[in-house]
Length: 436
Image 1 (cartoon, one colour):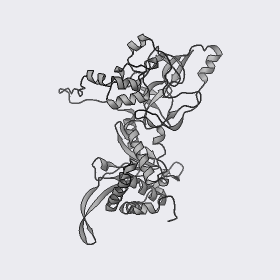
Image 2: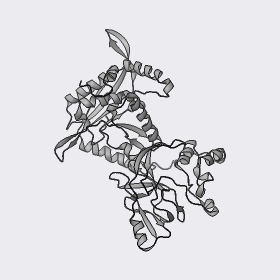
Image 3: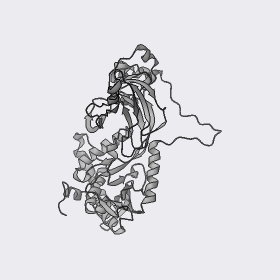
């Protein structure tokens, strides 16, 4: 029986994806759960697994091609299924995948991944036996996700590694044993040659970059941006962070300033719910969020992403720091899931980590506010009628003026900056609402 597998909607409202890498080719035996193709969508880069076992008959599209949701990706010949049974198999849909935490013992694969439901698939299977001819003519290496991550980290072309696993699959052991040989034989990679006779060069927009452009324009067109800037003296915060990091030395934990800022914002949002809301003009109402999910704008290789720290108001400073580190690590490795990017109610951007002082951040629409943090610097200040050296933290904030008034912004900032000026206030409210 010939089964046509179409590109599924793996997210909310997904319209298309770009082919990054094919893992299979015509004539190859595959099992349910084996990765077929790596796709870049408007939010994440992810592997698409096969829903059926069989032989690849046709693949549609090449590297860099865009595939619409619902268009064919591959055709699979399923042996031993004909007639009425074939109709039943073709109509059979596996259960929807669930998300659960795993810790795969290996090289950098830790976090949240898609795990299939009963009768469906896992992201990588090792079934099948390859002939010697298949191994000699292989162009794209079969490999476990752990092996691929390991090769990428070591800067090794995994397609040059002979695989000893089932179906010629490359394993961690293969990479370890052949790494030095591949590096020795590899010729140095030179940067792309620039033709001096041409004034321009062109690079196609990635799917994620196109989505960033679309969302930024939508925000500017739909929200009435109003921005304010201020700075706060945070010497007490600097000292508190130093003491906490000294206390956490044996915990293999180091706090940046961002977890303190996240906690200060989360606490203030409880007292200023309009900044944690959404404007629904179509139904003439304001939607107040009964949760505080803080999106953190991150400068990833493929472009801006805003993963979410959920229920930040209910988490300790340490837990917020751990969640933040996990999101940063997975953003760098392009391992964020769609679930990581959903349901943010307020956003924070820390452009100071790169070097900026003040900025005018763009609201992450349909949210109504975004808080920006600049680079901390030492400046002369007046303290107790004396000139002293202060640690000044610049902040910027943009709000949707259709729903948020200037007075409310000022009150919100007064509270946030108060927590940053005296971090002991944050500890006073740790653990929930005290009616204050």
